Length: 166
Image (tube, helix red, strand yellow):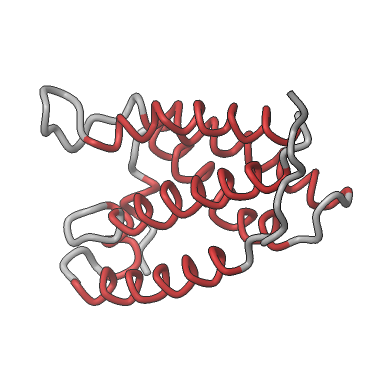
């Protein structure tokens, strides 16, 4: 493991990486924690804050330029705050199932899928973890992320929301 690619990155990229690592680490705790307890709520608040920082900093990173200075990850970075807002609005309205599904989908989409792509050869995290040229890192990450995605998806509540009058 060689931390130099992160150490010598811009402060924006370093902030992005740290926020993403916080979101990646605390996400499963927030998703799998017993609902409606204080630790689920605290973890959820920290996760939302980390995701906001991750998405905002992603908007300032232009290393992969597919459409002018932009890449598909910029679309995801714009979608993240919208999905966070929808999930928070859902829980405030008492729609727990919609909240849980939206948060889990957001975790899978942003942390697992987009995060998995950071392990491709030539990317900074691949260089840190695997020396930069290894497809092994991406293959291992894809397998682990796939298993974690299935596990998180299956952990979702199956209860139905109460019918709303009107």
